[in-house]
Length: 353
Image 1 (cartoon, rainbow, N blue to C red):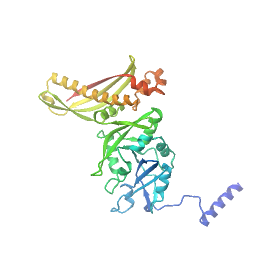
Image 2: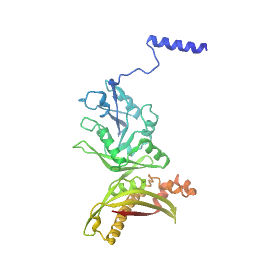
Image 3: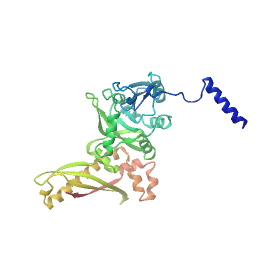
C-alpha cells in the first residue's frame, strides 16, 4: 500500500515539475495526417513517399494543397523516421489507409514491407494495397494538389459494386503469401499527362515476388476464380443483330476427380437488347456463345497462373476441403503440381430476358 502511495506521489511530482512520461499533447491543426504511402526501391535504398490527401485537409484551409513528402534510406524504418523530421507539422502515420507498392519493390519481395506494417505502432495491415506499374512515389504525389486518396477510394468502391478491380487489404495479401504461397493485388497505372491513376489488371505474386500481370480477359478470369467477379457485359453476334448480355456470377465450385481438378462455375445472364426478336434456336446459340466466352476468360487466367505456379485464389485448398486427404499436398511442392495438373473448366449460364 505504501509503495502505491509513493508511486502516485512521484507521478504527481513529475507532472507538476513539467516532466511527464505521458505522450506530449498535439493540436490537431498542427498535425499532418498522412493518407497514402508509396514505397519504391532505388538501387540500395528504400524510398518512401507520403501524401496527406483530401480528407486530412479538412483540418486545414480549403485552399491549401495536399502535402507530399519523400525520403530515402537503407531501410524502410529509416526512411519513415526521416520523414518525421521533414515537416513543420507533426507527421502522423495512423491515417494511412492506401499502400502503393512500386514495381521495383514488388519484384524484390513484399515480406519485409508487410511485416513492418504489422509491427509498426501507427501503420496497419488494414490499408488497401495496390501495385503501381512503374514508380509508386510519382503515383503517391499525383492528384493535382489533392493527393490520390480520393481516386483510390473511388476505385475501391467501384470494385465493391462490381464496376472495377477487386480491392485487397495489405493483411489479406500478407495472409495469402504466408498460407497459399502466392497472392494477387490490384494494379494501377499512372497517366503521366493527366496525373490520374487507372486500374491496370492484377499483379500476381509467387511467394512474395512479382511473377507477372493479368490483364483483359485473363484479369476477368481471375475474378471468376476468386468468386467475386464484377458484373460484365458481353456482345455477341447472334441472330440478325448484335446481342448484349449482362453477366452476373452466382458462384463456383472446385473439386478433385479423375486425375485432375474440376472447376464448375455458374452465371446468370440477362438479355439487354433485342431479346424479343430472338428465336429459341438463337437463344440457345447465344447461351452457348456466352458460356464459350466466359470459359475462355477462366482458361486464360489459369494458363498464366499455372505457368507461374501461382495458385493465388486457393483452388487447391478449396478442392481439398471436399477431399481432406489431399490437404497436405497443397503445402510445399503444390506450386509445381498446380502447374502440371489437368484442370477441367465448365461454365453453366442461365439466360433470361
